[in-house]
Image (cartoon, rainbow, N blue to C red; front, side, top):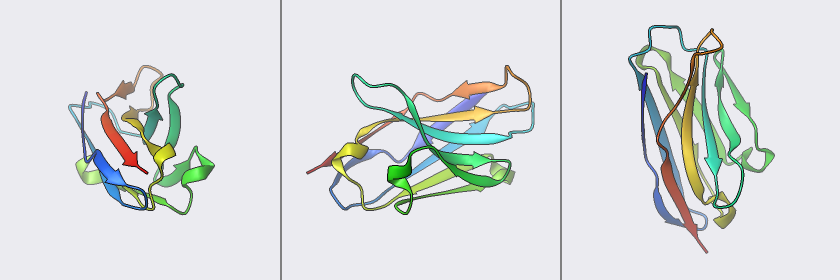
Amino acid sequence: VQLQASGGGLVQTGGSLTLSCTASGADFRIVGMFWFRQAPGKERRLVAGILAGEPKFGDASVKGRFLVSQDSSKNTMVMQMNNLKPEDSARYFCNVHGPGTDDDYWGQGTQVTVSS
C-alpha cells in the first residue's frame, strides 16, 4: 500500500491549508484514514480522520477549525485546516487501516509550518 500525501507548506497564523492523502495498492477495504502529527521532540498524535465513514477527532484543539472528508471511491481523504496556529506546526502523517490487524500503513508525511 502506498500513501501519497500533499498540501503541506508554510502559512501565517490564521491562514488555511488543505492536506490530501490518497491510498493505492490496497487489496483490502479501507476502514479508516487518519492524520497524525508530530512536532520535534514530541510524540506522534492523532489529529483527525474518518473511521467507517464518520469523522473522528483525536485532538480537541482542532475541532471547529479542521474539517475532514473522504472520497471512498478514490481512497482519498482531505483535511481542510483553517485558522491555523503556530502550535499546529508539525509533520503530518497519513495513516490507513483495514479490517485486519496488519492492515496498518503510514505515509512519509508532509510538513506544516505556521508562522506567528
